[in-house]
Image (cartoon, rainbow, N blue to C red; front, side, top):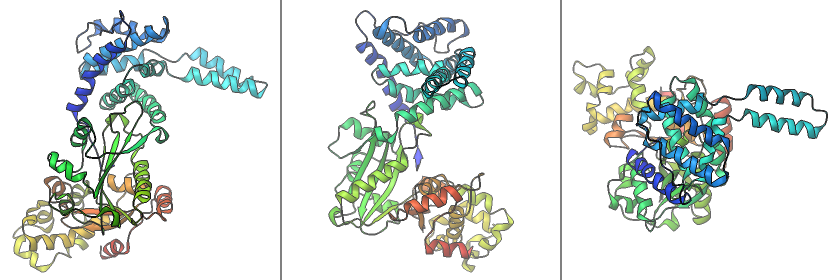
Length: 472
C-alpha cells in the first residue's frame, strides 16, 4: 500500500466507547466491570486475571454469562497501559498450552482409522485439539458489539509488543490467521463515499489519510467533487469503520504532478467524458489488519465499478510516491557503481558544486530551489530512479526494493512514467526529491504482469523507462 497509518486519537475514542457499549448490552444485573487492577498489571494482580480467563474458557453458565465474562475481560484489557497489555497478552500466549495428550490420542486415532468416515472424524478431532485455547477465548468477543473491532485493535497492540518474544509472535500469527478468514474479500462491502456521507465518516477520511494530508473541510470537499471519487471497503461487523480507502481523480490524460491534481482552484472536469482514472492515494486504517491483503482487491473492484459507471474510461494509472528513493540514493552514490550516473551531470552544474562532490550536492538537496540547478540534478536522479524502481530488489532477490512499487507490481501494474518535481511537499522532497511515478494498470495485461513479477521477479516497464535504464 502507499502508506499505512494509525491515528491514536481516533483509536482512543473508539476504545473509550467500547466499555460503555458492552455495559449497555449485557443483561441487567450482569453489567461488566473491569477487575480492580493497576494499569501496569503487577505480578500479584495476575492470578485473578488468569482465573477470569479460565472462567471464559470453561463455558459454564450459558450465553449470557459467557458474554458477561468476555465483556469483563475486554474492559480489563482496556484499562491497562502498554506495559500492562503486553503482560496480559503474554498470559494469553503462555498460560493456556495445547493438550499434548489429547493431540497424541487424536493422531493415533487418525492413523488407526479404517473407513473414510472414521478418518474424517479423526481429522476433525485433531484439528480441534490443535486449535490454541487462547483463540477459543479471543473469539468469544464476537458476541459483543464491536468485538471484532476490539480484536483488530488488540492485534495492533500485539504487533507493537511481539518483537523478540516467540510466544507473542505465535499468538500474533494465530490472530492474523483468524482475521484473514473474517476479513476475506467476499465478506467486504465496497462503498463510494461522497460529500453527503455522515460527518463522522468524513472526519475519519481526514484523520486516516496517510499519503497526502487533507488540509481542511474545503480540501476534503474538493476531493469528493464530481470529477473525483473515494471508495472504501467495510466489514459487516465494523460498518462505520473504513478498512482501506482509495482516492480517484477523473481526467483526460495521465497526471504528472500531485499539487496540480489536488489544487482546489483547478476547474472541475466532466467525469462522463473522462478517459483516465488516476489513483493518487490509498490508505489502510487498521494497523491490526497488517498482513491481511485488502489493497489489491480494492483496486480491482474499483476498476470494475468505474468501468461500469463510466464507459469512456480507457486508462487506469496511479500517481505514486517513491518512499525509499532518497535513502537509497544516499547509500548508492558512495559506491563505484554510481560513477556512470555522476558523470552524466551537465557541465553547468559546476556553477553550484563549489568544493562539494556531486554526491554531496545531490543528497544535500539545496538545488531544489533553483529551476536551472534542479534540471541538472534531475538529469542524474531520473535514471537513478529508474534503476531503483526496476533493478533494485529486496533480500529475496525477487521483490522490488520500494514498498509501493512492490504493492502495485504484485497487483499486475507496470512502471509507466517517472515524473520530476511532481510532489513539492516537505514529505515528497524528504522521500524522493519530489519525484513520483505512474504505475499503469493495463486491463488486458494485469494477470500476465502479476504472474511474471510474483513468480520470476520480472518488472514490467514502459519503453520510456527502459530507455532510462539503458542510459544508466
